[in-house]
Structures are given as structure tokens and as C-alpha cells.
Length: 426
Image 1 (cartoon, rainbow, N blue to C red):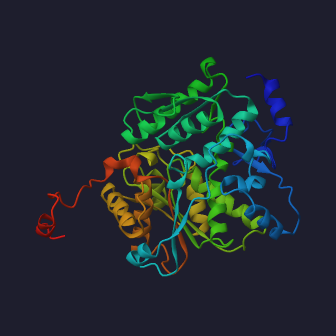
Image 2: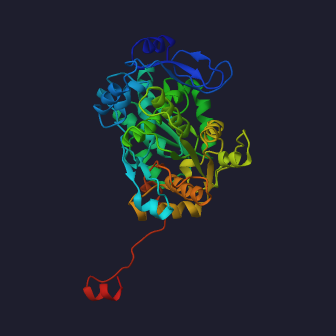
Image 3: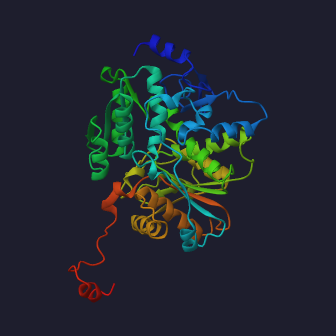
């Protein structure tokens, strides 16, 4: 892609209130572009804003948001997207249900109010639709022709679907041994799906090499060279939770941790809402949830370390199986700053938690949701999470994608007669 095309793209008002990319480590600012690492210190870049909103009138902004479409584009004034983004061909994810989980609360002994933010209701049945939607708008602005990613499954499906809808070619890369449901969902949209022999970290390294090769010319890798924009999609989870609670920050939020980006951007979203006066400035605690078979951030937190040591994943929660999480250190910072924690659960506890959520609330979560519910239960049992406070637990995907994790079948198989039904004792 020519430099002139990039410069032309960023002179148009396609990034809304976004004004620059800012290094999370040293604060260096660079123009908006398809870059993800600081040239000064190699720290991660994220989107910086100048919100052009009425000063001292948060109520007007609330009304503007509430009058918007029932998806993430209601928050367009707070995102790096054009004002007319809702008119573009996209999947319109977001504004998923915040379920008041009273049955689960009774099982866990929560008295302060328990909610499940159920993102399985997104177009491809995971939260990844949010982040991809923002990345697609950046890809349009920069003139990319192919959308790509490295993925543990859900992102591959989200990119394939969004590319099909928006008119991009897609070519996505996954570990070769993903769950069958996720492979089918990534392949069905007609793009190229490439299995890489190895772990997600191997896939991610390969994609980083491809970006620097002529073969990758014109490619937008949503979680690499478009990562600063992509990550902003996770902020909408924080926006929605607070709006759905009556513009109130919950006391506690439990978030699954893979790369850690989702947790860090939820914290960023909460801080933005406070700064804009949309919610009361009050303490909140953020907890990270990992599977024991891939728990580098949890181990660092419990060991009191600042460095997250990479691990080789070995867990049924493959959507969280990132052994070298890019945002791991920032997850540690946020958990410690907010008075939260990072914890992990075994695969057996994950399966039990999937069944618990399904039995109590009728929500069939994928393995990542089982991790989050399982960690919530463990934190309560260990006296770390306060059951008297309002708590939101994230379910980031649909259990139909990870059917192999849960063995289930008919209670009984009988002949079509009342006598057979009575004999079964049902």
C-alpha cells in the first residue's frame, strides 16, 4: 500500500474523535496509521482521543447514545470510526444481553447482585465481532484489500464473516488442532483458512513475518498492524455494561484472559466513562480468569511477579490458550491497581462451571465462559471476591463451538409409549 494512500486516508474524518496513536509505555505519539509498536521504545500503541463533546453536559451525551442503534455504533462518538459508520456494510455487533443471574447467584452465595454479560449473542457468537468491526473500519481507511489474523478460533470466524459482509478478501491462520466447530465456522464464509502446525504463539510469529514480506502487501492483520484500533472494540463491553446497569459501574467484573487485551480495554472504557461524566467516579475491581493449563498471568500474579513467563498451553479452553500474552503485564497492573486478582481453574472445573451456568441460567457457554464462571466461584470460596457487591461475569462465546468439552446426551431412550415412559421413572 502506497504511503500516499495512507496519508490520504487519515486526512479524511474517518477516525472520529481519534487524533493519534500513543505509546502505552513512554507516551510517544505518532500519526494514525497501520502500526502497532512504538519506534522509540517498542511499547504497544493505542488510540488517543480528543472527544469533541459538549463540556459539562454528560446528560446530552447519554441521550445521544441511547437514541443510537442497538449495537456498538451507538458509541460511535467514543470510537475511532466515522460518524456515519452505521451506514457501512458490517455485521453490527454488540448491545448483547446483560442477564440478571439470580439462580447462579443463589448457587454461589452472591447477595449483592450477579450479572452475566452474554456475548454469545453476537453475529458469529463471540465477542470477537466487536473488535473486528472496528478493525474493518480502519482497514477501509487505509486501503487494505485483504483481512487477516492469527486466531485461536473465534477471531478467525469473526474476520471471515466481517470480510464477507464488507467485501474484503480474507485469509486467516489458526493452530491446526482447533475444535471442529470453530474450524467450520471460520471456513464457511468462503475465505482462505490456513492451519499452522504448532500453537497459537507459533501462528502469531508466522503472521508477524508475513507482514514484513511482499506477500503481505495490502493485508490488514486485525490483531497485528490494526491492533490499536481492533482493541478499542472491547471498550464497548464496558460501555454496555454500565449503560445496562443504569449508567453505573459494577463493583466487580470477572474477565477471561487470553492475550489480556480485552481486560485492559474494559478498564480503559470505564476510565473514559468516568472522565466524560457518564458514570459516577467510584472504585471498581477487575479480576482476570485463566485456565490452569495456560495460566502465565495468574501464576505471575500469585507469585508477586511483574514479568509474565511464557508457557506451553495444555487446556481444553483453546480460545484462551495464548502462552505468551502480549498484554499480560498490563493485566497484572490493572488487577493490582483496582484491588482485583488473577486466578485459574482446572479443565475439570471448567466443564463443571459450563454445566452450572447452563443449569442455572440457560446459558450454554464455551470453555472460556466456563473458565470465567469457575474462577468466579473459586474467588468467592477463597474470600477474594466479595459476594455482597454487584458483580458482572463475562461469557465471551457460544458453547456450540466447543461441544467436545462437555459430554451430554439423552436422559433416556424409550419406545414411543406411555408404559415405556413410566418404566423409565421420569
